[in-house]
Length: 119
Image (cartoon, one colour):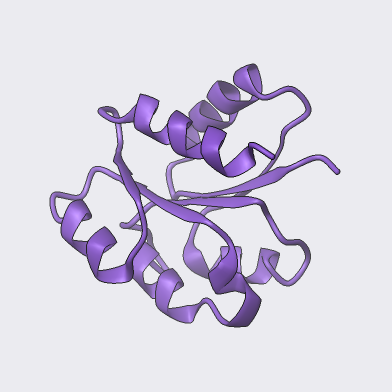
């Protein structure tokens, strides 16, 4: 089965950039995208990704709102917060999830994806 990653970010350029970056490193990787937490929750009714990469600041439903709204099996899906928000480390700690700062921690994000997707 081909692993799928869900990228949640309101910035289409960021979503496309992460998609290109990951597809170049992981052959056959499927990537689905959502522009906010509400759209992501709807997508999670259709499929279960191997990993979720989630921004924090988005319209409609932000990252923390998405984290609170996830239910049941959705909470078992590995998730990494990926944001430029100044409180990113504290919010990630509050929710017990890893984080990678946008523009600064691309290698950290890649390492987390590698660890999550490795058999």
